[in-house]
Length: 171
Image 1 (cartoon, one colour):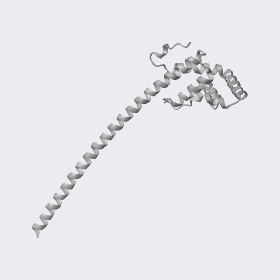
Image 2 (cartoon, helix red, strand yellow):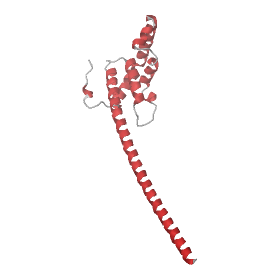
Image 3 (cartoon, rainbow, N blue to C red):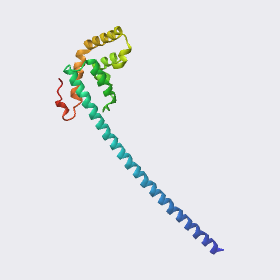
Image 4 (cartoon, rainbow, N blue to C red):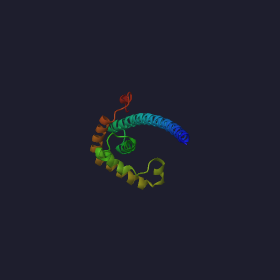
């Protein structure tokens, strides 16, 4: 009877040792898998950060060029404000500050023209309606001109042009 008990204990110990070994292997594989996932996530984050920087650089270049054209009065304030605001809404700023407070002139002009029809959509309106919309736009450009010019100066300083594009001449 004692031999049976010793045999059962040995078999039980062998089973427990085998299960413990198997559990150790699973834990090791899990640990390796977690490390691999963390490595892949870090790689994805780096790739995302790089693409965000590249996108921001392209947006900053466009914003800078439009602001320069507006400052030199080569682009109407209404058109430039509309374009700049759309580009800025896609830009990833370092801080979450309210850009409408940063650039109040551009924002005010954008608010006036954002609902106005452009291109083919204008053709659906009568000449009188188009003239009324143009008049409202011109008045807004006149009203906000000084603040828009100040915003353009800030934008030119804050949004750097891509190398080579700072030499673009507007004629």
